Image (cartoon, rainbow, N blue to C red; front, side):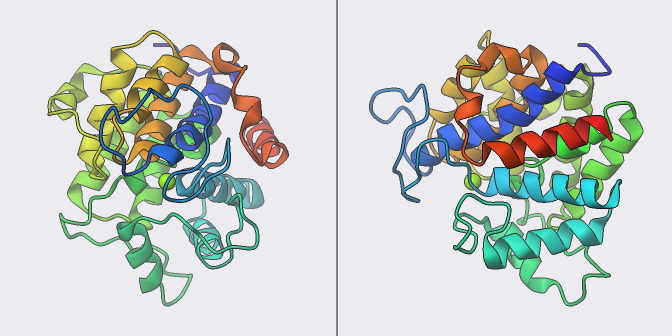
Length: 277
Ligand SMILES: [Mg+2]
């Protein structure tokens, strides 16, 4: 563990999210270990993705980053407006002329509940509404607050509540935010990892599955490969795995792949602004 994180570790956290998402998209909804293992960017799958194309995980992270940069701090209403723009117009995504093409059920029902942007916290408290969307997009909250653990956790939970209000959503968001900030697994959250490994869209499964991949491999690339080849919600488990492993190993360790993520200039610019505010 090492904190505050270095620029390279922050870049690893950022690019790990997009690489894990983009490597996982073509494997979304496939059975575990389906065919030859995927070890790099590929194309196809149920969303007919291009190589290096990220999905909702990356787009929502960029939407959060844009709100931090615009307001020079956390603003729930600005983030929620960006989420709505993404859903309706595809802004922050990879297909500018197309509305969001990969959107989770918990997220879409929350966004459809918004009546006025001044009241942006739309997450349901129903325990069944515990999708992994709340943890897949944490990178900007952690990088912006890399010098303040309390702000990193507090703002991570606040962004969770925009779309996810269940107890599990909050518990796992706070745990992952804490661990991303310090850069390693913490004993106090060990019980959250102690469950069968399964790439479902449930926030608890995604958290445990991502940590399993990080703790059973020795590089960011190997962790992502391990995570996405379990299929299921491969892109989001890939994104969470990429954030954790990228934060631990740093961006330089996978610089042969992250410059090939689509939308590179916008992502590069957002990372620079998160780091230098
Ligand atoms: Mg996705």
